[in-house]
Length: 253
Image (cartoon, rainbow, N blue to C red; front, side, top):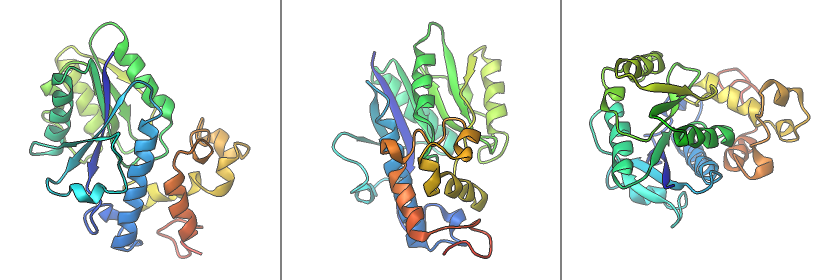
């Protein structure tokens, strides 16, 4: 069964990625953080067996900025369309049109997402019947959407970049009689509070599996540095030695 897993990625250009983190990170550091996110997300994607890894990227002409992030095993697929919804839709439609029996696209801002969620995505898509798989994000959006047939309506009349994206997407699915399968909730890193959560998750003691924080986060920790995942993001955070909320007074040591 041919299946594809794509990541929606921006070229890691200074001043154009993770701009909401610029109040406490220099543009160069925010760019390097995003490069780490991409590297760790791709490593995460590679843990899903028998699945082709695709980087759905923008803008055109910025391919060189992916040097050192991707390898010859990864395929670049230029995004097309107007708004974010169209770009997601076209990426999935293009992959399905190539003969993939199922395709999913995820964000590039969730480097510690448990890999089991990705495996669950394709298990759900492999089951008989048509459906959409959505990964709810804590901000009201979704970190992943998976399909095995194109459904344009899923991406229409959605308040993108708002806390209503998930609910409205479910409403669109209900309108066309499409089954919705929900993955466990996870978070993406857009704001200082999200980054603070990431810092806490990747603090050194959270990699040994014995800290209470791991138990509170479910399988968080099992998929991190010990398995070679989130290693780049962890190294970035360790280098800055973040010890409190990035928005707080003593955010670095």
